[in-house]
Amino acid sequence: MNTDIFTDPIFIAVAAVLLIIAIWFLVYYFKHRNEVKTVEQTYSKEKESLVEKYTSEHEEERLEHKKEMSALNEKYYNDTTLLDNKLSSLHQFTVDKGEYLTDLSLIQLKDKLVKDEKIRETDMIILSNIYLPSRNYTNTRKIDHLVLTRTGIYLIDSKYWSGHILHGINENQFEEVPYVESFFDLLDLDKQKEQTLIFEKADSENVSVNHYNGIIDETKVTAEKLKNKFKLQYDIVPIIYFNPKDNGNYSITNYSEDPSIRVLVGQEDLEAFFLKYVFHGRFQYTVKDLDEIANALLDQSL
Image (cartoon, rainbow, N blue to C red):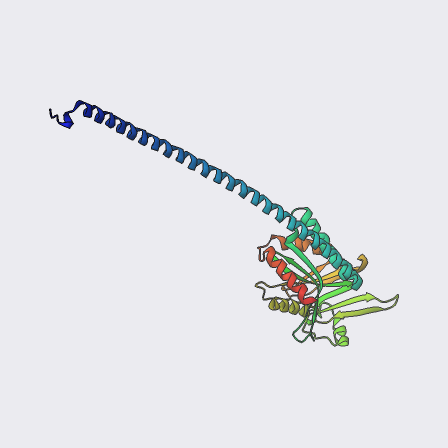
């Protein structure tokens, strides 16, 4: 008896079982695949979280290390700068007492400003007894003091003196101070140019008269040459500083009509100038600029 295989109950039963198994396998496969996908996503998120945490912690450590290195570098710079200033002051003392005292006044002023947190150590550099050579070295100019700050550079011509001084006087003051004309004639001074005369007691009966010929022009020319040599964008401020000798008897009359040069007398006047004008202006230089200018000056002065 021939029976169609597709109508055979046994075949139908086997086919049904196989179909059930196939359906179960598919259900299990898709369910398992979703679980695997979920695990992969969870792992990926955990991995990203761990990477982000590691990166963040590493960045914090890097920044902290950078901060520590910066603090160490600043401390090293401050310590070496202070030592250089002290050595420079000792060197100055062996060369010129007046210049040494001026240098000491500037260092004390800087220390006070740093202590009062008005400036940082690196905001002010003091150079003393440096030289500006010419091309053929026949007209080398000596600079008593140079103060580099972020608001400007100041060239100080320091004079250590006693007696009575007439600064910036010329023929325009002859009517006001008639006896001065005879000294112009005696010393053969240009009556049209501003001159500086110092009257000092030589002994109980005599008075000596000294003059600084061209002190104003020389100081301005040196400041201009320094600016041009280093191709600076801003003018260097020239200052004539009269430091009274041993705080003795002295007086000064400033007749100068030249607004481009400052005339300061004594330590209080020097400090007042820097406190009033220097650290309240617009920044002209960065700390890096000051350091580069100072190093260049020291290199060419050797």
